[in-house]
Length: 385
Image (cartoon, rainbow, N blue to C red; front, side, top):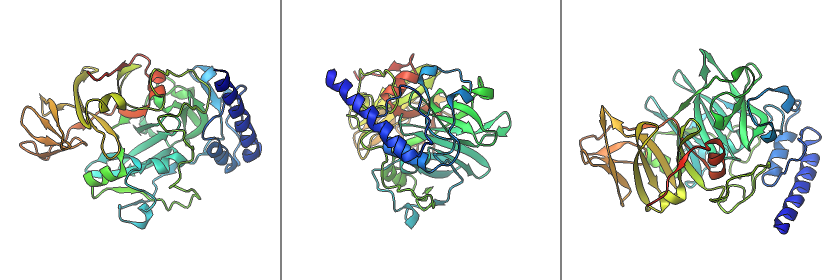
């Protein structure tokens, strides 16, 4: 215990020293913060910005003030708006390798991929598919990737990175009004005029780039040639996201009953719902399935531990009928009602239902264990039998 405290003390001193030197006075630190991993990246983002630092006192939020920190200026981590998209074989996609993780969306028959590599550096992408706006968000500190419908009360929000963190989670703001919305993982607005107002979640599928390409050969992906001066091949947070890492950038008391950086597939129902730790899903086998009812909705979870772990949750109802599934070791899922074969993304590839597609639960997403336990304290954890 003494050595752990000593290590934390040294880490705090290291963070303060690096932040002080790199930010040139533009990082506002709340008293008592503990920086551990990713300090070089945070400081570098600050050093790129000449905007005034966002202060905690500037906003009123329905949040625990002890977990709310002012870190950077608003937009110091620059969100992207309608970035150029390229096909997988384009030189602009050469920054990606098959094992890199992406957030995939499928809208009106069009597949797009938003790599973690891009989102480590930008965190928010405001994009438009046909006439539909979407906001794809990823917080590197909580490992959480969510997509939102940015239209609220008939007005589109242009989401950006506020410079605040809450329980190590990205706090978003509207760049059109300069008003803070709230943490990504509360989903509903928590600050200022957005309190008690909520953006709607949109379905998103997190998996490896190689898997997404194989499922959607006609996909496009955010180009790495954005002119932002960033190295999209490099993870800027050191070893922070490794499952053996116990580091958190800002102080909180996480649930340590499981590895705090273990990925969890969450199905969010208020402050509860269901959490499927990847370790528990992997205990079922390399290719696994869970049939359950979550939040009153018949739900099926597909898990594939090969080629980068992927866990996705779907509404098990199709055309008025509820389907139940078994996993095939070859890497497919078969519904018991018709014998049709299904792929990991919820599309039927053979059998009577070939061409059909299950609806990805919009309230399902992947995040780190500590973040799931904090933001969904009433959630029930799935345990492999």
